[in-house]
Image 1: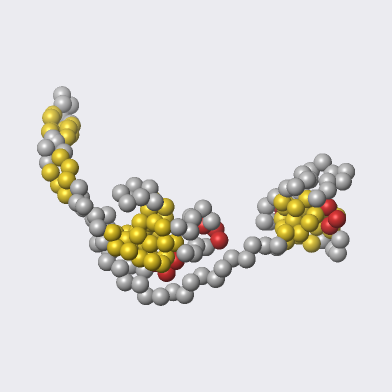
Image 2: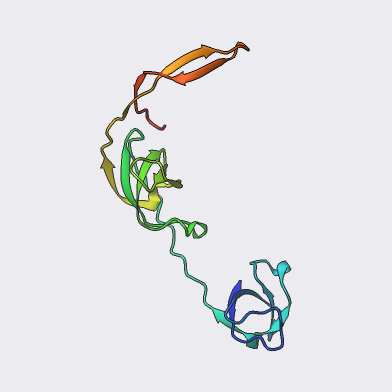
Amino acid sequence: MLQGVCVETGQTTTLVEGMQYYLFPKGQKHYLVSKFPNENAHMGCYGSEYFQLVEKEIWPEEPTVKDISLDPERMYKARLIWRREGYKDAELKEYFLRPKMSHAYFYLDEQLERFCGCFPLHWFSDFEEIEVEPINEEIELEFTESDHFSTECVLKEVVFEQLSLF
């Protein structure tokens, strides 16, 4: 699939100069032009002189799948080194991981509150185990009955330790 930037609009009212379009060859000197990567969604047929072709970004090959054994009860810090082309929003940088078999849930923060997704472990490198302090919280529970025999739950003193997410 070709892509091109409109360099001249000529007498057209639909093309925008400087905008990138998907181009589908129609003969030797014309393209069906679309804003979407779908030939059937084209907005017309225009001369090739209106466009400058753009070379498609070359996406690197996926790293070789390798057996990576991590303890699912532990947390790790690792660098994301690759992702599929559709996941461009996931930056290639360090994340905090919770392994799950051959994949890992990854987060932006050490508290595991800013979830990013779940990717295969072989997309990460430089694994470093992180020590996590258990969190003790006090919660109060109090049960009261209302006039309609339903039960309300109000928090009272109960102490528990942070449980594993998995």
